[in-house]
Length: 331
Image (cartoon, rainbow, N blue to C red; front, side, top):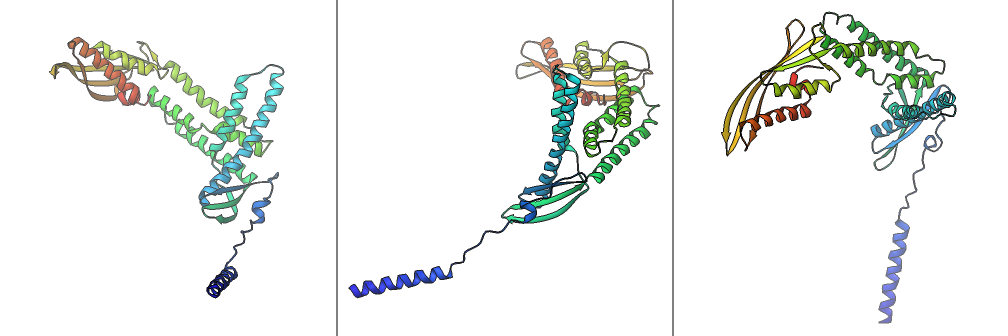
């Protein structure tokens, strides 16, 4: 019996020794030097490391990190200017602008980057090193801004024959397309401290003043064969900062509502079924937009209350879809 135990123990020791001899020890993968000691940004180039589950995500994160360094520089510059201007007086609007600039810079696209290194460090773990030439980045932003402004100014030459609403839509859309302008100019100033943004800001300001002047001069008046339906329409137009007033000039527009309302009943409710036609006319009575709606008001308390519910339905439709869709007009 003792001999048998001895044989079994000897066999187990032998197998354990063999297993130990055949076991492969995986050495941890050494991280690349460009990852552990990346090059530092300088007066001519910006560098950033990015990581992600995929190579594309790693590049995106690297660009975000790169832009965040510019955000810090921009915030520092604006803070310095604020201190000089404020003295001992705190101006909250300046501080808010700095914070907004800091976050909005992240939305600027960087297209002229160079991918220097890319490596898979592990399962779903990629790392990249990117470089951006400051001069190329600056020139790219400048070219984009000039191209945008030139296209807008070229199109502006053809809007003289348009009505005031169409002109207002042109300037609003143009300003919307330039919403990143000030952030781009702030980045350009960091990239090239001698850069002056004055001429670009003047061109933007001219467009803004044109928009604001039209917004102040345009007026609407709303008429309906069932006048309560005019109130939600007028309210929706007024919410766009447009004047509700009965005037007669080239900046005036009339909204005409024709409602064919019929009384009906169903399941104990009184209904007010309405086919509503809405037409918007310019100062010369030309129809520039029209739309047709089918709405139903209902009440268990009679026809007059059902018609009041019809007005509420129109108001809710405007709140949900927007006055532009209800009028079929871009205002």
